[in-house]
Amino acid sequence: MSKRFALIGVGGYIAPRHLGAIRHIGGDLLVAVDPKDSVGIMDSYFPQAEFFTEFERFDRHVDQLRRSGTAIDFTSICSPNYLHDPHSRFALRSGSDAICEKPITLTTDSIDELAELERQTGKRVLTILQLRLHDAIRALRDKVTAQPNKRFAVDLTYITSRGRWYYESWKGDEHKSGGVATNIGVHFFDMLTFVFGKVRLNEAHLREPARAAGFIECERADVRWFLSIDAADLPRGLDPAKRTFRSITMDGTEIEFSEGFTELHNRSYEEILAGRGFSLADVRPSIEIVSELRSMALKSRSSDRAHRMGAA
Image (tube, rainbow, N blue to C red; front, side):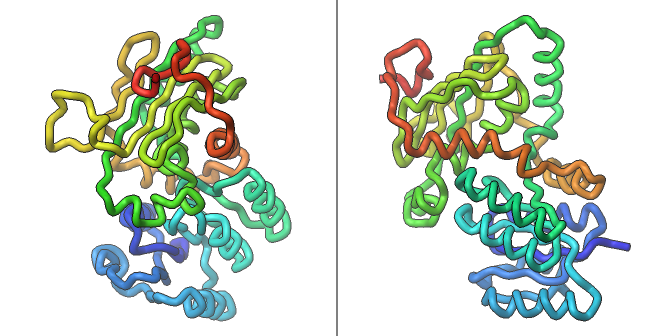
């Protein structure tokens, strides 16, 4: 029997990945909600699904489904970052598991509260940590594990340029998005702890609306990182048609992982249905990193720990 899904935030940027993944695993989307009604994308996946622009009507419909014996199994959450926590709570209280986009919450306190609600309801909050499923990242982790006595030097650079609209949207409001390190960086921080182990030291060197930089000492690596949404930070000579640049070097050698992203949500849903989804405990280290970065004092940008693009 196919699993029944609800989707919150179906008009969002990442929602088509979830729609495709639900279809990929043979699921059935029964209902979706979004305050915006430009959701024609649903016709390509689940044209028969109910749709609401008011959350209250969506809530009522989900409750009616439960009362009629066709309760939702999973609620997929693609809403803005600051709503992930309350929408995950809604899913659990409605009797479904939650599949939540990153970042699952903005603070570790919210993770603790969701964990308590999991215990009360018997349902789970699962999250999309797609880089853990990327073949190149898994191969990198295997390489690190195979050299238990070696410590690595890592440089992470991610520039994904955004226009002026970004600052007028919820993404430009740190209270709603968590800031640039959270919004575009949290999945990279999760990847770093997945590959190189627990964080021993977390430093912020640069914190601006468009860019952030810092240093992380993991169990197995020293990591200098730089994140930006400013097109001016793109490398010279890059194809003008490309507005994104990502690079990870380990001991000076480039780690190639520019391809292989399109199917990762499908794989994430496959893992969830197989009982191997990523939990609140899995995601907690990355939320600790980004929540600390928002408020910690900035360290010197002239030290050898500073990323070259984040240095003074």
